[in-house]
Image 1 (cartoon, rainbow, N blue to C red):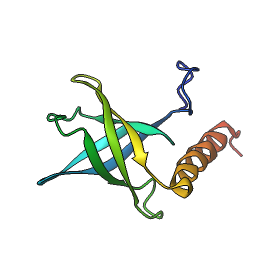
Image 2 (cartoon, rainbow, N blue to C red; image 1 turned 30 degrees about the vertical axis):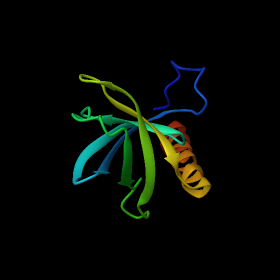
Image 3 (cartoon, rainbow, N blue to C red; image 1 turned 180 degrees about the vertical axis):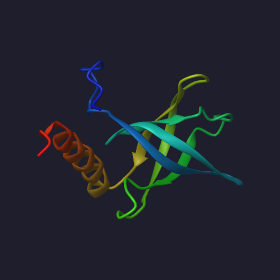
Length: 114
């Protein structure tokens, strides 16, 4: 689940399948987060209009957790891969929530079946 191919990244990335609502001036759309870290995420499919590079986003890690609301900036856009964004305004609490949530999942996946 963790992306080990990019050791030079600042934060570990985790494979995800999260619904995200993206708010841009005059528009709100739904997409999926396919990779996430405490510093940003990969949105799929790629956003069609990245002219407005500042986004507001809302997503949650699980049904029983509250929504994470943050702001992000488009870093890159590759049509067949997705749109990479860096979180520009996200609370320390939410950053830690992302890391702890996915680290717990990794630990649970490594546990032998009882």
